Length: 325
Ligand SMILES: Nc1ncnc2c1ncn2[C@@H]1O[C@H](COP(=O)(O)OP(=O)(O)OP(=O)(O)O)[C@@H](O)[C@H]1O
Ligand SMILES: O=c1ccn([C@@H]2O[C@H](COP(=O)(O)O)[C@@H](O)[C@H]2O)c(=O)[nH]1
Image (tube, rainbow, N blue to C red; front, side, top):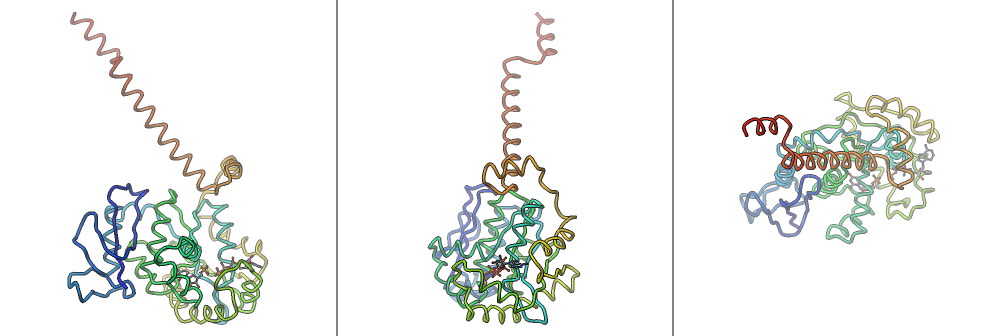
């Protein structure tokens, strides 16, 4: 299986996309490279000059955002990784539930990688079948896929504050993401919940998810222990882990979460919030639209003035012209 990175140079950074497609085509940049999508650092035998997928993505991102500067500016990450108690836990601790509340209250864009993957499956894309199978088995999808989806969502969001829910699930995803973007999360929220409670929540969820079965849940717990706990340890060693007791009711958990997030985000004001409700959108989206509108208005006014100036020169110029006649 080979995956390639395509860069469409006609798009602006906001509209740009990084795509994994079966045959590479770099619109600009190095000649075609083939990359083994399932080995982060592999070099294809058929092409000795092949880039690793990480390098390819890095190159693509650099085209979209020279030196990663835009991306660095735009990403401030709060990552949710799952939860654990007595070293056994993970899915169902309430990440999605708390993320929705944080996004509403602190103006973050909530990006659930699990949700992005589910949408990719629904879209019927080439990766869809592979993603669905991996999710059904409770496995972690390779970084080439998750990071592509994540970066696309980041670039499309128009926001500069992101809440990344359920990522990175393993060291490979963490290392690839940090290497590509050159950014680390501000902190990682760890929702601590007993395994039995998480089981209860998952089995009561009833949203028709392919992984909400006892069998898959057990597999997910194992994957969590083997692959995600080392990521938690990594952030803990960097003093970036913030732990909250997630076994309590939703609002009680959120009270503690709010304290952690308080320094990280301005609350959207009430009129913005009312507009978001009226327009049926998340308020961060409304803020971004208002910002864009302001920028567009400023550009239009500047344009009108430049036209006016060419028809009506400034008074001093007119006076000078009159004097000389
Ligand atoms: N504190 C809580 N108390 C009781 N139920 C909760 C709590 N938090 C979330 N739930 C419920 O538990 C279920 C799982 O929550 P949620 O989907 O937010 O978890 P998650 O960690 O995102 O799960 P997954 O990792 O499987 O995506 C949902 O039905 C949700 O309504
Ligand atoms: O970074 C990620 C995040 C998720 N997955 C896969 O999706 C499911 C469900 O994720 P939730 O965040 O719990 O909704 C997870 O079990 C993985 O199979 C992933 O591969 N990589």
